[in-house]
Length: 529
Image (cartoon, helix red, strand yellow):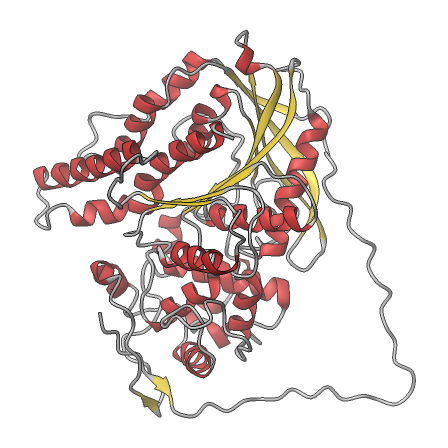
């Protein structure tokens, strides 16, 4: 596919010079090192205690046969119910609060879930493995992954059914900036902060064990790390941080994450605009501004005037996504304008055709009432041309640009995960037609590790779209994923779709179709360790 991107022919570079006055310079005393991973309520609050039968009923309640047309999450939940096997253990879900840091290293607090199995079965007590889980992007400031109340939190139900009911302890932070956290923003995709948040949640949760609701269940010493979407990135960053610190990790399985941040965001600025881009861009730019202080001088440098006021504190929000769009706080799709407004632009770049099937998704990202200013986009793209990424659009070094000059690109390089190789076994899972987090991220990590990881490294990649091979341990999920897509498409056609059901599949692909199949594949991977 050819995307025509217009770039400013000449962009001035402003140098900010700091003047020195006479007399003595004063230096502020260093801040005390924040205390991290301290449990703030001991014992933690028990939010729910659910029997295995009760959990099964909660899952079944997510399947509503009267829904027309069939929702993708219904197909995913049906598959989960069919494949997860007998739910063996009861589940006690605790709300933990703990100390951590923000994106700039400031002291703050965060909260999360500690879900513990219990019951008479030997798999539900004694020393049990821990799954450290990172959740996907949500705009809801009140989000609490410890809430097992029902249909509002399918991710929690998946964790409880797939892992906790099968004898795993689950620790899952809400992240700083959510729920009861005192941080007024969320450090979205800031690798250093998000990995510290995960480690701090784990430290606090371990200090709470054993809990009153499952007094015979303890930490068995094995640690698995996983997460989905944003959480896939956070999971990988956490494994990197823990192994660098000499902390033992048994295995990790990031799912559908934006690991190659620099390349991924470059592709978006070039015109391959992911679904939901305005929300992601707002989270990302404001998080990096809070963390590094140099992404823009004012919000109007990066964001169009109609959105700029208050956008640096907009997300996460008390408003739903629907209300954010309805009230004009954010555009639903349009990240960039139809025609760059500045003079002096020149014709440009041909992007790869690998995502041609997603062209309708990309097209939604260009339109009226767009979020990001033309000047900001042109400055970014000028730097991308002068300092290209080594993995996209052309494969050269395989890593982020060595010396990007534009501030956002420098921050993306700092948070790109193409700079390490794993010690513990890793499985990457996703689907190569993903319209939200492009498969490009997994491909680039696989390529980087193929060059840099030692021969002894155990690295697996599961593309649910790929054909099963001989002795393929994931032939079942691949087949069933294909069937689920066909069911969704057929149902959409039955209810009037004229595109062969393609839109129905694309709409639910990332958030609800891929997830249950990857969850169960990850469970199988962990069971074998």
